[in-house]
Amino acid sequence: MREDTRKDTGRDMRRDMGSGVLAGRTALVTGGASGIGRAVVEAYAAEGARVVVADRDAERAKAVAAESGAAGYTALDVSDAAVVEAAMSAAVSEYGGIDILVNAAGILTEAPLLEMDPRQWSETIAVDLTGVFLCCRYAVPQMAERGWGRVINIASQLGIKGGRSLAHYAAAKAGVIGLTKSLALEVAERGVLVNAIAPGPIETPMVAAITPEWKAAKQAELPLGRFGRPEEVAPTAVLLASDPGGNLYVGQTLGPNSGDVMP
Ligand code: NAD
Image 1 (cartoon, helix red, strand yellow):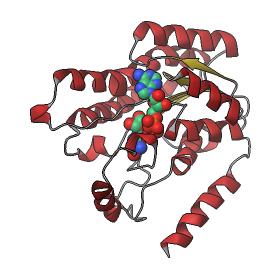
Image 2 (image 1 turned 90 degrees about the vertical axis):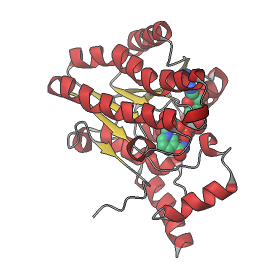
Image 3 (image 1 turned 120 degrees about the vertical axis):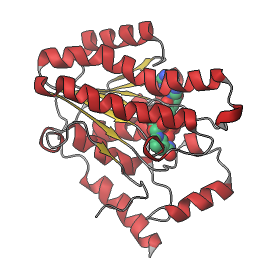
Image 4 (image 1 turned 60 degrees about the vertical axis):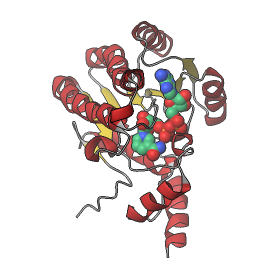
């Protein structure tokens, strides 16, 4: 039964993509060189958007941009304010504006809080939370000025539920959800809609290092009985970026593969 569901889900999603709902829009996707960000880059390009792959890994960003039909790439560290400001400003000059910002850059490490090196805490907060703040801070003003924009922040179910040995990551992701709801209140009236996606476990390089035992236990909790795939998150990011679907959501957090079966 599960095998069939798995195959059908992937096939249907690919078939449904490509109706051009993002034609004429420019999107910048942080973390676009890998995993969920990469799947969003591919889905946005397939939907007709001009996409900029923004990642700290310049080589992979360049390769993904070439393979996915993205307009270009930019190498940036989302935790560096000056670098983010310059990258956003350059993208606005080159493409005439950024209409859609997807914050998917992130890092994940594990450590029990009682043994955690404060530097590990700070680094995670800097990339996973402050990085989202900085990208919003320097990309959203020009959206508000032009009266249209979409921001999609990739949070996590761990930001809602917490996770053992993941207090730093969970705190950052909970912060992303609070930032999302707050920014949504500030800019919705100016045509900029801000939402978050809080996925459950998704099969990407980020989770590749986890132990088989943990993975087996985690999979048993999930409604589909397996980890999600990046291309199963991307359609939610398309919906939230589009005009018709996106207008339904302001300051919401949607949770694909979350383990919570919605009524
Ligand atoms: P990934 O490791 O495949 O991709 C993350 C990307 O972010 C990489 O390309 C990396 O180079 C980039 N990056 C890391 N630090 C950066 C920085 N300082 N500046 C710019 N780029 C940086 O991971 P993924 O699983 O695709 O994660 C994407 C997002 O989804 C992350 O925010 C992650 O926390 C979130 N998320 C992942 C899962 C999961 O199970 N994989 C679940 C929920 C949320």
